[in-house]
Amino acid sequence: LAMKSLPRGSEEVFVQRRAVLRSFEAAFPELLDKGECLSLACQLPLAHGYEQGAERPLKRLLLEVSKRLRAQGLEPAELPALPALLQRLGLLDHELFQDFCDEVARSWQELSTSELTMLFRNTEDYRLLHGTKGSALSHL
Image (cartoon, rainbow, N blue to C red; front, side, top):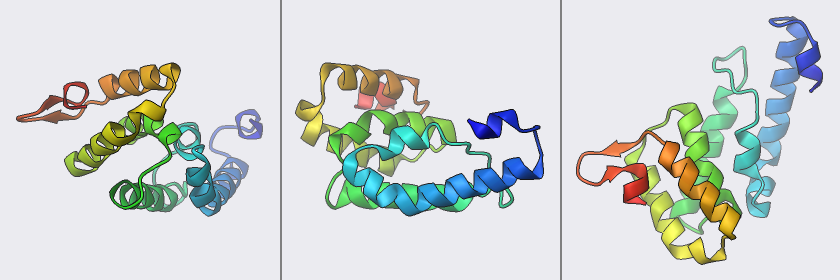
């Protein structure tokens, strides 16, 4: 919020953005455990590039999400936000999406009606298209 009041492109904006991203990077393992990480990641200032500071935390987050999907699973509350984050980042990874679909199949009953609705809407908006499995939503 304080960043919005600063002049666009000012050094203070860059410093605050880097501080927010460093803080997020340090906290995301705990946030993933609580089911609060991916929706927060969708709200972060994610300008790319070294000077913006977003590349490293995002790579680490996606690696951790991928690892958790394959090993222990994600908290069900994280599932609705994952397609939205992938869409925002422009990441079209079929293996990661398949792991996501497998996790949804395992834990969809733990989601509330509103979480399921958000999951379907975010997946519908995700622009992943598989040659044989169709759109992201039809694959899910």
